[in-house]
Image (cartoon, rainbow, N blue to C red; front, side):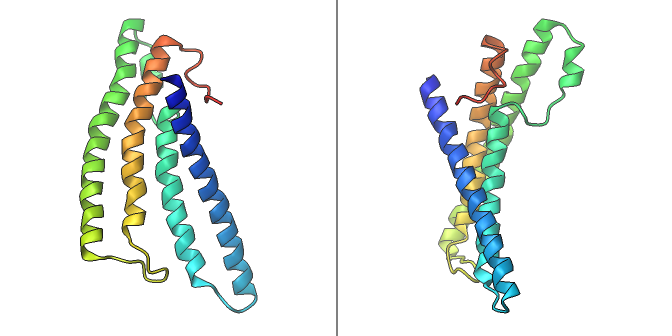
Length: 163
């Protein structure tokens, strides 16, 4: 199970890395072409798509490593048994919230495909910008649950990325 978790988050990290490097390259290209007087408008749209991918995959990674927003200060003053239950509240809330987000995101993506929505410059399906929302909404609760279980089983290793 640990190997599957490690492989999954390695793939997510790799996708984030590729998206960030792609964004940097595209923005550099955009600045250079504007400086030369021949703007390449496709670079702005493509970098925006990569930013959306980075945002939602990064959100899921944040849940996996416990760097998501939480009320840790409040929990530290409570009894250890209560703290354990509060640690489980975050993944349970994530499952409920992101189930709703992924459901409506999936419906939106199907609508975009059905209506043939395409981006103005690149002429690619707009569903490509909705797909990372769904992937992130599926991965975030998985990451939150994994992190919560590790906090309970191995508290000192829960914050360390598996590399």
